[in-house]
Image (cartoon, rainbow over all chains, first blue to last red; front, top):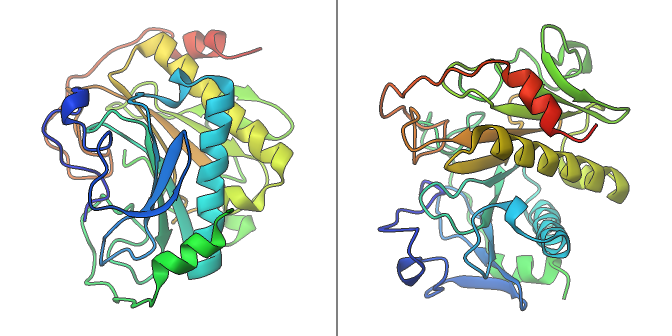
Length: 145
Length: 145
């Protein structure tokens, strides 16, 4: 709902919900990262790109890993644009609650609950619910194989 | 204050406050982008990396330009970490109000007004005011020449 993750103790690997990965809608996974579709009725198509290792900041990655992660944020942005044609893309790496490197790729529409404010601000309206059939399959197909 | 920009008509180049650049504390500028220190008493060290051209999304840039911008986001993150040693870095490209590509690089502290929520959420506390002498000069010195 809020686009960030409530979490008991994000500094502890054993309790880090991003180190675990149960019940996710997986769109892509390789040896370094995974891309998931976030289950948010207000923000269909909201995706997260999650680095596998419990690393805190982008600048903690080596150059090759950082480029790989960034490339997949861009692949995800392109897939979300192609499938949903949003008015704007929002990208964010926050991780204040869960200091495990992950990126939000959020399709924004002028009639969504928070627009033009960030999705973490107070909602301004109910927001028009968009229904999408087979959204995960469409996004998977729009990502590089 | 809110970390995003109130704006009259962001779709219009002539009115785009990011196309203009008056009254900014400039940390770096080249032929493609500029890095500025945001004037926010609650978030000293909050920087913005602003692309010169009025481009909407990261995926609208060509590969070389996108890498250049991303490299400077990382240079800025490293400089902010080196100078302020924050508990967390937040990175975000939103642009819902001003669809002109710009990135927020925000040093977060556990006692800042919103932590651990994003700075766009409702404030949780007054926040401890940190004073920094010569912050712009220190950040400039920590960025590549």
